[in-house]
Image (cartoon, rainbow, N blue to C red; front, side, top):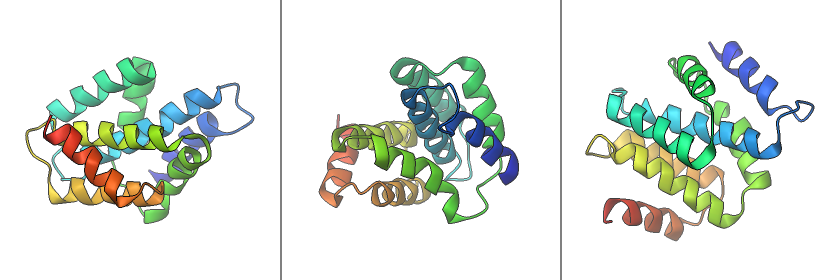
Length: 148
C-alpha cells in the first residue's frame, strides 16, 4: 500500500512532472484531508462528501484524481514519516495564511459528521506542528470553524 501511495505522489508531486506547483500543492492538501477522514476509524460519508466538495470548489482537483486518492488512502499510513512529502511541499510553497486556511479546511472535514474526535484533533494538531503554524493560529482556526 505504502509503495502504491508513494508511487502515486512521486508521479504527481515530482518536480520533473508537467503538473504545475499549484496542482501538486492541491494534491498534497487532498492527501491530508483524506487521511483525516480516516483518523477516527470511521470514514463517514458526510466527511467524504465534504472532502469532495472542498477539493472541487477550493482546489479544482478532478473527480478522477479525488477518487484515485481516496482509493489509495484507504489503508493507513504505515509510519509517521508518511506525512513528510506533503507537509514538506506545503512548507516550501504555502504562505502562513495559506497554512491556516489548510487547517480550517481540515477542521471542516473533521466536524462534517457532527463531532471532532480526539484522533482527528490529534492529527490536525500534528499537521499544524509539521507545517509550523503557531499554536494560537491552530486554536483560532478551530474556533473559527466550530463556532461559526
